[in-house]
Length: 350
Image (cartoon, rainbow, N blue to C red):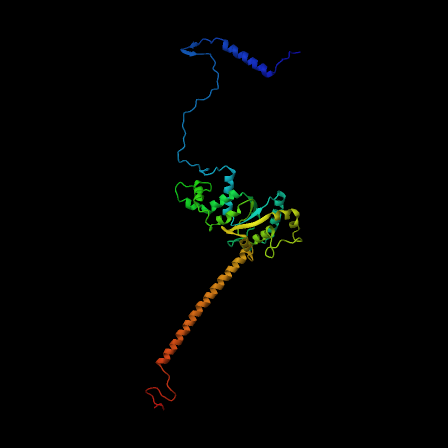
C-alpha cells in the first residue's frame, strides 16, 4: 500500500516548486564558452511580468467642445424630474386636446375599473368617414391615455411650452434649443407668468393637489362626448349609460372610483377651456364632420346672400339709369297733340 500524504495536493505541488526554484538560484552561473570569437552564455532568461511605464501624454479637449449626444443642460438630464419634464413637454406639443381631473386617492382596483369602462365607451364610437386632412380615417381609441401627472413637473412643462420658442432661440449664436437648456430656463424666468391672456395663467390654478390628465391625439368631439358620459355624466347632453346596456358601469368599485373624479378644465388647441367650454366642444353635433358641414353651409349662405345683394344693387342702378334715359328722350322729343302734323307736312298729307 502506497504512502498517503497528510496535506493537500496543491500544497505539495507548491512545496516542490519552491524547492526547485531555491536549488536553481543557489547554483553558480556557468562560464561563457568562446566559439570563433563569439561569446554564448548558457544562462537562461525567464519572462517576468512588469508594469508598463506610464505615458506622459496630455489629452485635453478644446474649451468650446460640445458632445453630440449630451449637449449642455440647465438641469441634470439623468434625474427623474428632468425626464418627466421632457415627457410632459412632448405630451403638450403632440396632444391638442387634454382634460384635467382632480382625483381623491383612487385605489389601483378603482383605476382599473374606470379605465375599463372608459376604454369600452371609446371603442363604441364609430370611425369618421374621412380623416382630418381628407385621408383615410384612423381609429384613435388606443392612443387616448388617462394617466396621473406630477403637478409640479407639469407646471414647469407648461411654462416651457408657453414661453419658450425654439425657432426664436435658434437665431442666437451658441444657443441650444432643447427643453432642458439654459436658454429655455432663462426664457421661462423672464416671461410674464401673471399675464391673464396666456393659457398658462388660466390653467396654473388647476395644478394643485392630485391631478389626472385625459389626452387625445386629435380634437374629436365624438370621442370627447363618449369620455364625458363615463367620467363626468350630466343629463340631458351627456347621460350615463343605462344599466341594461352597460351593467359593469354600475359596479360598486367603478362607482366608487367615478365619485372621486372631478372635471376641472381642459386645454384645446393651446387654449384654456373651463367646465362649460369642454362640454361645448363635446356637444358639437356630428363631430368634426358636422362642424365642416355647418361651415360649408355658412359659407354657401354667405356667398349666396352676397351675390343676391350685388345683383339687387346692379338691378336697381340699371332701372334708375333706364328710367332717366326714357325721361330725357321724352324731354328732347315731346309728343305732338292729336291732329297736329309734324313740321314740314300737311294734315292731309299734301
